[in-house]
Length: 243
Image 1 (cartoon, rainbow, N blue to C red):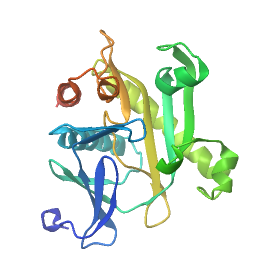
Image 2 (cartoon, rainbow, N blue to C red):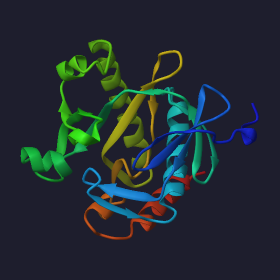
Image 3 (cartoon, helix red, strand yellow):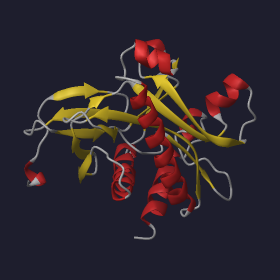
Image 4 (cartoon, rainbow, N blue to C red):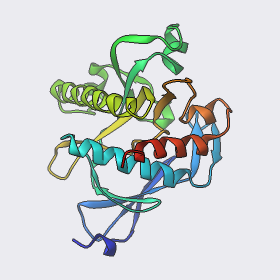
């Protein structure tokens, strides 16, 4: 298949960070990465020129890495700076939160000391529903809402989340970056298989410089620290550094 002939056709979804388009192939979609920035369930909004392209490039490198490690993902190819070709997938409406270090909402909601290294990897589920504020889910909620077929699918998602975490923790450690926590999304491909989808970028990952503790992710926007694009560029440069 000549991917240079694949073009966007119909817009099927627009979210906070991406637009999703159909192509001339039923099994393939195109994601267009936007420069928009949002936080606190859309209450804080801005834009940073070039942010979308950085997220696309970072996601591309991480999807390639995970594919090489045997993780099934939707990634096919980066078409250009802001567009990624990927498999069509039915989104599972569960945001999978993976935490290695306590910070953010975990510290606020449970009073756990910010920066505390957790005794084990914590995997949480949030309901992917903006109108409800993405509430926390337990396994029974997931079944009642018909988000999965049975508990074995939740077990598989947890297993994959932890496996991805171990791979990315080690990957980032070599780049002098600490993987604090991150959000993953999964979907079903055209054959019904559960695969990793969405993006893998500092919009969805908390990354701290391993020596200085400097935040290299969207917390720079959330907390008004500035320098978001510079931080994202540094993350990309470190990822590409050994290539």
